[in-house]
Image 1 (cartoon, rainbow, N blue to C red):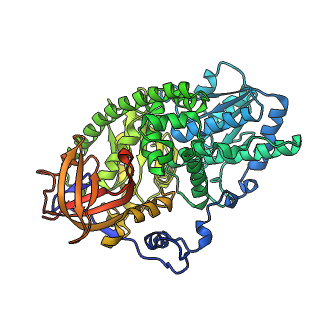
Image 2: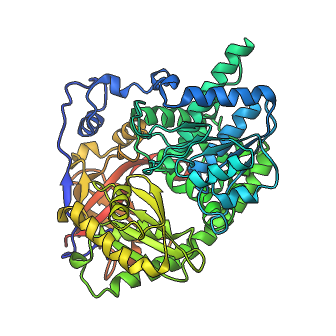
Image 3: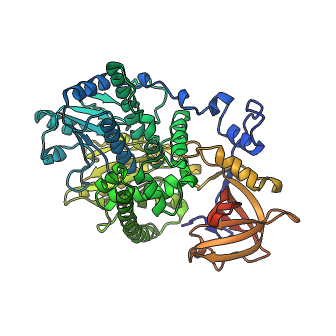
Length: 581
């Protein structure tokens, strides 16, 4: 299986994005940035206006009116509120945002609870409701609830109404909570279906704050102060960065870079070795979010939420260090599981081209909190949808599914469930990721059905490991000026990908750094200045040795400013490396 650095004969296919119309974009933009924007469908200067005032109106989010009225009434009464979160970064940031804003509005009778993966399952379940030791006047779900019919009924039976805030796609049957806010309900008219759970929570808190300001006739703390949490949760959940989400993320990044984020987020960045002023969507997604997610994967996400809730920098750092330790344990566990997953794929005794269209993998020793990472890594290597399962008790396997562009994975599971109603016990999720449970005795049937359904929907050409490139840069464009322009042109992320270019270079120097990474000095053309490049995690993947001085390589790369060591210079970060002799 390829991991991005390949010898000749194992090439990936590089497709260059079709150019768009650049004449409709502002002339003051860097010419490379104009080309990149046009290739992503940016059609006017208005699309680039990411001012906070351009957010879709709060009042247009489906269900916001009833949810606001319900929550405001409970705030008037001084009700005991309990936020029911989720065990990923989106759920953690959603929980922290709601608690922080309600307390800033003067309501202190609010706590939170995160389900235990093994004991309770996902979201608001009857098992979680039965485990609540104190009565609450209102339960507020964040980043979950649209599939919690049984949990909502169990809560109602105990005299606890439920306010659902969620963004996941609903199943065929909707629950009946006291109120529900979700931009993905049938018939929803909100202008974006891409809000993360923390985005939905942000909108609700904005509406509640506005209503209380109207009632009290005073200015109250704005929920925009918490956009750092919105940026982190949105990037971590890999929702598409449409214009509305780009506004939220951009404003959140501005707060973080100005040092005005919550102490916990700043502490997580610091233990990851990143200063607040250097934070980007890449930093949030690959350094901060994994440390937060690790707690929910193998420990208790309450640690992560307490970190985000702390106002004491010293206490926040202590919690961030604990999360960093948990993340190291997670990496070690994930590494073992990745090796086992790779062996499982190889043991199919099939070449990559004849693998099933969709893979279902299982190991009795796998951890249920890590299978999503396993599915992601295997998908990246085999270029097709993958479900990885782990045991969750004697009678249940829990799986995490990861898809490829062009295939809606939840639709795949729904189609399977419609044809074979007994096969999947529960499922839910997004276009690119979903969770499900099956009985151990039905795993083989599921694997067959999954491969067949994926094969029906996914064209074979989508399984070739295509890399989408923004084309070649001219040698003069490979510069710090271009790198800074591209960095400032974000935020980049899911659905609005960071620019990726491909060129052929002459290798001037190459060496292994940090045991696992390749460091290069490259030249794009004779008589041009050399440029540094790095290929993370590629040292062991280049047989028989790193490319030697004088050889040529074809590189797919991101052009980024490198601030390591206090300097500032352009660097190419390799996503794919092919040695051409």
